[in-house]
Length: 124
Image 1 (cartoon, rainbow, N blue to C red):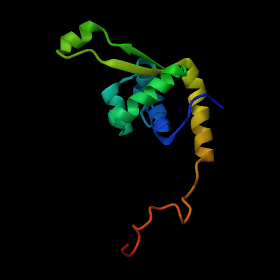
Image 2: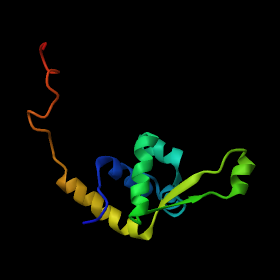
Image 3: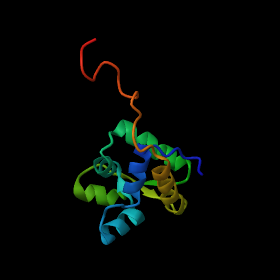
Image 4: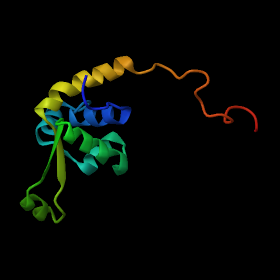
């Protein structure tokens, strides 16, 4: 469907950028203004080392754009500028379809022999 590999972590990031699970006003703000990195990390539960490579892949595919907040805002709050990420119109069109497709194709359960050996019952 797309050039973006929609892993479970990518799904989590896309849901956050689409404002899934948020009320109407907050969702609208997330979609139009985006989220900064720490917000995305908190919302998704993903560490930076997982989150930022996903954001970069989504950006390269044209699904996400990034921008720096205005200097005046950061200075007024006495902190460094934040880099924001927001879904692009292309991403807003493609992400819901990719999420739906990923949900349909996701395995429902692991097979009996897919666990880690030696962990269930007994010693080695």
